Image (tube, rainbow, N blue to C red; front, side):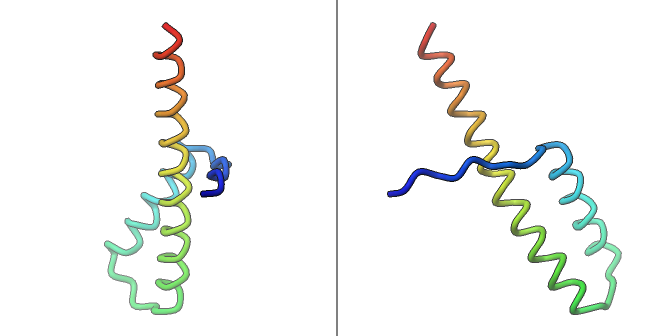
Length: 67
């Protein structure tokens, strides 16, 4: 299995953007094309944020193991 690519995203900014996308969907906007683009972006953000969390978790395990 190839190594995972390092997530290059500012966690707080990515999370804030994801929240904005969720709010847009909650408003019930009827624009299908824009909705598809926003859904795709949300999927990308979700994946990148998940990777970033995994990196942080691994780093914490490394630090703990050194103690």
